[in-house]
Image (tube, rainbow, N blue to C red; front, side, top):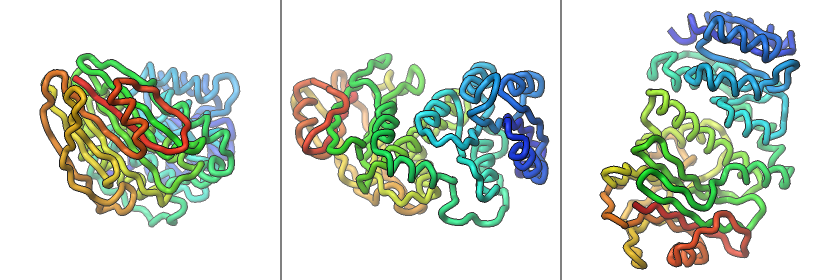
Length: 369
């Protein structure tokens, strides 16, 4: 079936671009509705309830950010793709926070890129079957996600890159229903090559990850945005009753690896992703790479967990993560350590300071039941 019969709503104030995208979607057998601004788009959404939204950010009357916020309340299960010429990465981050599932930058040099993005979003939302094959010509390697403009913009603008990335870090300590999360992270450059997060997928599952990106670059801010958006997509799908990958570390990291390889960014990422079942205290984790170490902590004693090494994430599409499972005892903690001992020393002293600038880089993350 592919994209045939899928109802798409295109909200775009540029009539030429709107016609171009609409004609392409019709060629794919899609049912197309159009709106020239966010207010009309909201009205069309309520009347037609499409399967997919394509949204510009800068429009009269109601802009794309406000529209996405309204759509996330009315129909959070409907995937939306932002297509914009706005190169401000802070706006892209806001769009992802407001519910956008993906984004593409104008000009779209190859509309097959749009085809890829629509297919991926619809698979995630359940609009098409997960294993549906949708034939199309091969994409050029450097056009796989149409990311080059944003990538170069952040690489050449350290200040903006630092501000964008700073929005992605969690507060130093968080409490789940039955657990406590805390971290300290030390970066040697304004843009960190380390990234972490902690969040509740639901009342039963608390999720954390620690990642280190190579090579060091201001463009790591963009890689950080990508990683967060991929996690957000799976988290949203899980909360809507769809994919359970967000609570399955092996599946989640495998998906992340596939997406990073497709992006063509040529970065290598060390990462450990952990999911805690809070009621049973069962821990599932998966890892790419070898530099991030996992430990069990009882009082001040750290006992290393023996987890096999593998190649970093993003190196090859066939590269698979390694997994580990165990149950935590009451008051026991799982810790992730990487780099300089400063963050480790804070953890042992039960202090968590969040993100810091330092001469040597490192990170410590703890999840305690």
